[in-house]
Image 1 (tube, rainbow, N blue to C red):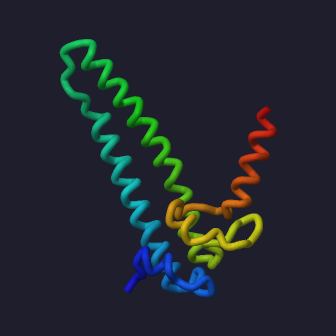
Image 2 (tube, rainbow, N blue to C red):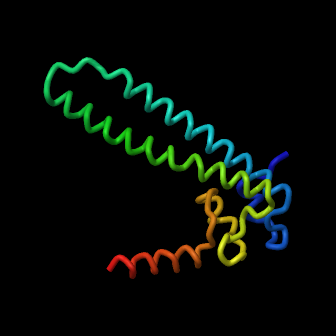
Amino acid sequence: MTMTRDEILQAPADDYMNKAQLAFFRKLLEDLRTETMDSIESAKRQLASPPEMNDEADRAAYEEESRLALRIVDRERRLLPKIEAAIKRILNGDYGYCRESGEPIGIPRLLARPTAELCAEVKTLNERKELNYRQ
């Protein structure tokens, strides 16, 4: 039986990334992969069969909806490799640990972003560096 979200949040720190938690996150990631693939397929079907449009307002609304759907599909398409990489990290035993510092990423961050590879501190530092290089 897999853990619940509440159980995983209440687990002691020394239980971090034990088998039960890894099973929880693997299921979470597999569900996310399925939802993402379903969403992409749904958007493709929607874009493949445009409705009958009688006036310019309908056409403009459809084009705006299509552009938004394409952006969402692109974003979700880029999410799939991240999901696969996270599942591989579970199998390799390094899921939940920052790829740069080796520190725990933390349960709350992983629940919010199960594909996270960096702890919040390193991510923030990297974003600040990016911001400084752009200016």
